[in-house]
Image (cartoon, rainbow over all chains, first blue to last red; front, side, top):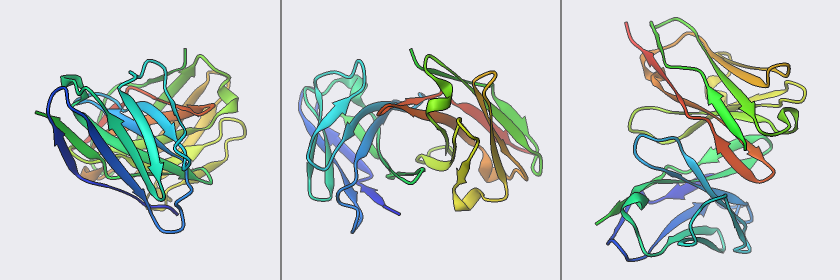
Length: 111
Length: 116
């Protein structure tokens, strides 16, 4: 079963860019993942599906400021022109045989 | 549009059971399975299990085996999650979620509080 590793926290200034990382465990580097955003007090919201090739497909209404990329076992979520509403927890997720796995989440602070 | 509407908050005593519902709309219910995910206060997301809405097959996380039962009612497009022998550390928000094609949708969450 895959394991997803995320940094616990990140910070960046309003209007700047940030790149969050999710790393797949050994032997699972080809797995597709999804990124979810959870704003304080709200349910998670699907952002995108991200393949090992770097191809990503965003959910409806997700701003162009959000993009994804991949390198080996690493999956990235990039956010440009940071807004105050981007301050949230970001989780990566993958799945294998009807089993889901979540990363520990990254708390993004917008300074 | 795809919607997952969950039942309201619950307060239970230790040792009791809770049953949370998740009513789906906006897509063909029996085509996509539904997962349950919980989040304890201040913690991350924890997958509990998955149910096929087509035939009722389930796959539970090992941690919850023997204590959780997920069921489906195709007549009302509703999935249920029952958790038994509740403990204080079961206090959490419980979410249902589904992937329709490749897009994942979440319910609004149900707060379950376990307290004596």
